Amino acid sequence: DSGVTQTPKHLITATGQRVTLRCSPRSGDLSVYWYQQSLDQGLQFLIHYYNGEERAKGNILERFSAQQFPDLHSELNLSSLELGDSALYFCASSLSPVPGYQETQYFGPGTRLLVL
Amino acid sequence: AQSVTQLDSQVPVFEEAPVELRCNYSSSVSVYLFWYVQYPNQGLQLLLKYLSGSTLVKGINGFEAEFNKSQTSFHLRKPSVHISDTAEYFCAVSDQSRTDKLIFGTGTRLQVFP
View 1 (spheres, helix red, strand yellow):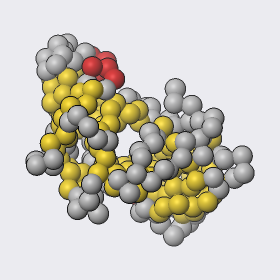
View 2 (cartoon, rainbow over the protein chains, first blue to last red):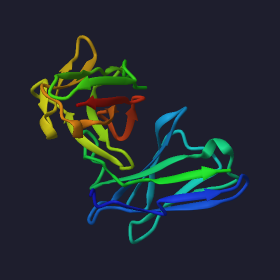
View 3 (tube, chains in turn cyan, red):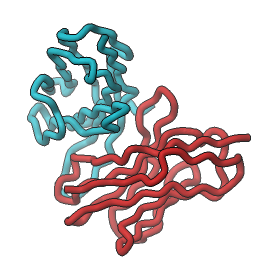
C-alpha cells in the first residue's frame, strides 16, 4: 500500500458525459501527479500540482482539467468524454519537486474509466 | 525531449532462471532513470532508480539495473525469478532539471512459468 488513495476504483459512463476522479496523496506529500494509462498510448504524464499550484503539463487534453485543494487532495475532471478516453488514470504523490533532486513518486491503485 | 524504448513487449521465462529486461533512452540532457513494476490490478511501485554515482543500482525484490551512458541503456536484471515476479515492468526517465515529469516506456510483460 503506497498511501495514495484514489476514488472511485471503477467508473462506467457514456460519451459526452463529465466525470471527476479524486486523489488523496500520502500524508505530508505536497505534490500530486496525474497519469493516463491506455492500450494505445501507454503510460502518459498529464499534469503536476504542487501545494495547490499547477507546475507542469504533459499530454493533457483541453477537455481535461485538474486542481489541488488546500487539504492537498486533487481532482481530475474529464469532460465531453469520448470512447478513446477509456483508460486507467493514476495519481501519484511526492514530498516536493526539488529541482535537481528526484523525489520518488508513489502511485495510487488507479481509477479505471470505461466510456461507452 | 526524452524518450524511452523497451525493446521487448513480453518476456517469458521459467522460474529460477535469470532474466534481463531491456531499456534504452534518448535525451539531449542529463537524466535520472527508473524502473517501476505494476502487479495485476495495482498501481506502480518503484523498483529502483539511478540518480548518480555507481552505475550498478540495486533495488527491491532482488532486482538490479546497470546504467550505461555510452549505450544509453538501463537494463533490469534478476539472477533467479519467482512466480511472484510476474508483472508489467516500466522503465522511465526524467530530465534532471525537471524531475516532476516522468516519461515512461511502453512496458515489458514478464511472465514466469513454473
